[in-house]
Image (cartoon, rainbow, N blue to C red; front, side):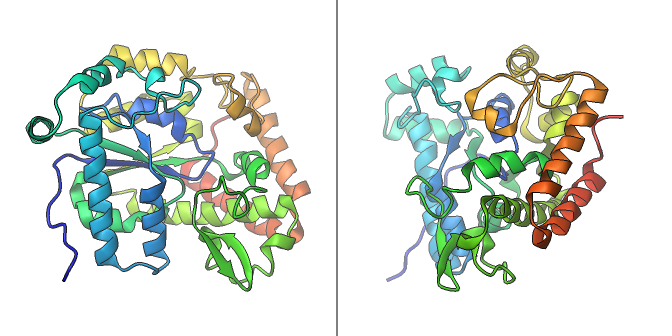
Length: 342
């Protein structure tokens, strides 16, 4: 007896991926305005399957089938308005989306054969948001090929430090961390450090060094991933700094990849998110963003000073063992995307 799923519903799969803290929440609402798209959603089970396969604990054939099942189920659920996030405070909530009327209609539509016929008649982009899958998402491309679109959220590594320092105590410890953990050298560590052979003891590191090694390793992976995909037609990197200061080029590329958009809706959405802005951190004031050390700065001098303060913070907080490597990933990022101030 063999498991099989030899076909799946039509429509493109759009994966918004990136290191935690790179601005994926900002992109969720924006990307859903391009083409004919469903409401973006987070799926830990899709992440878990990809990671488990990447670590070679589940073979390709089994994960291939399970991922097709998960994604087909999500397409069907969207079509009938099932399992929609209605929490008013969640940034991914339907209540914060421009698609409220569409989903109310979906709540009231017929399910079964009628819903399935609509999926075939009018295929839509299915947008899944994931956390630092990067290379672990390769099995999704094996399945969906050219019908898969990758949106890669990226951010300067020095500006990720505060975010990771604020949450590193939960990683591979808290039951609210729904990412896979692994046992390495007798201790529990985050899955993405599985090949970090020089890591002696993650649990004995200071929080500063824990945050540093997470940002370093993930930034190295992100830059490697970007180099491998940057010339592919279904890939688009949103480097946070340049995007929030000057979004026009990114909107044009998104249109070319995902389809047409309503300029008024996009303009309204970006206006609410304060894009374009005068300083990269001068976005909306939300509690979740306070961990980034956001400030309402707008002069070129303030931007330069803010940048220098972030670099100095890394140099002073991170031990010598990881400091030089942190600077290396900073230099690599700047080599690819430049600096956003004169």
